[in-house]
Image (cartoon, rainbow, N blue to C red; front, side, top):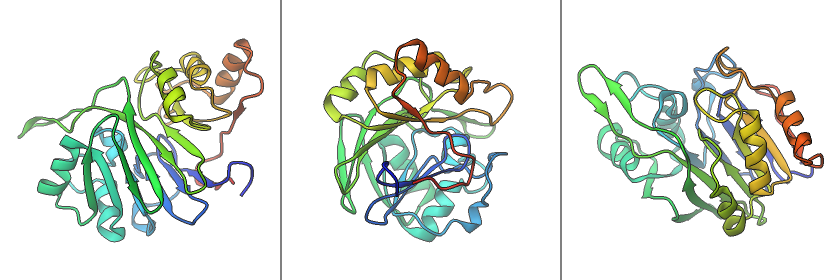
Length: 248
């Protein structure tokens, strides 16, 4: 592993796999139906900690009303610890009936599992789904996660969000070193917003996510780099691996 201190693989969109210093596997927003994913969900056989930022199909990994979302299918095979916002946790336990160790929580709370500490933080987005038969399905609010790894390093997956001023509080309270930030625009912040987020967070490394999946998600890592340079943040590393290629 390089200076990151852990190994990461971007599977397209917001789907991030992290292998921790102790060999634990964390999966954030594991949607393997993305056109940029290079791995089929059926091939995923490792997950110790599952973290889904919100209930949209491109983060949960499919619709809650038809079929089995990728995150639930993976959890059925691997039985991870799954901290989730309260409403999503209720759905997972009572409707999906996942055998994962689901732990309901909310923003500001911290859960410890497998030597890792997971804190749920704010995100600015939406989270509901619509089903023709059931109508609106509420799976709680969107969130981000700060994870403290076994060696004390902290990583932050922002999920889908716009930049917001309280990212400065995330920096003060949780001190993340690496941030996974959306840059695509339209549904989330674009490169300019993400550069401001980096400034507020004070992170040394940023991994862009939620871009390039579809033409409407038009922000690019090069645009993020330019926006960071314009803010004088030349020392920040932009790490933009190809889908499916491990880094670290």
